[in-house]
Length: 125
Image (cartoon, rainbow, N blue to C red; front, side):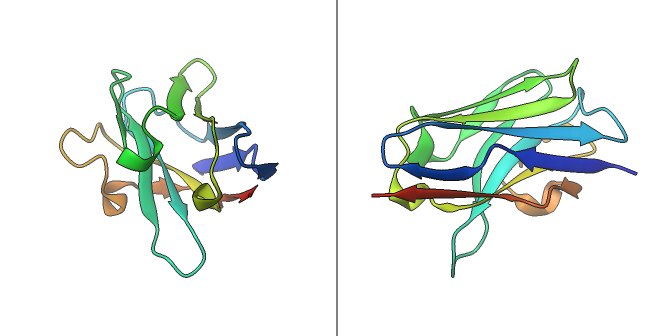
């Protein structure tokens, strides 16, 4: 059974940093695209960042220069380093993994096959 488990969320102040982790089990994703999405209260789930098997990364504009996505295939784990956090970053963050490398659709949630339960990130002003 494939599972993705997020960790690292919490309550921080604006300007602080957090590092989220997503540990995968049940299969390896070294040849697949993985990504982070988030959902704020009352809003739809939105794309945050993605990393392809080649380590090519894509970010949504609002987090460029502040967030860094990475992966450690030996540990089957993906990370999201979040710096200079803002109150508008407050959301439940979900990790996702696809069964394949998403060449042209890495921002689209429906193309991901596996999802974690989410971890809450709250940024106070």
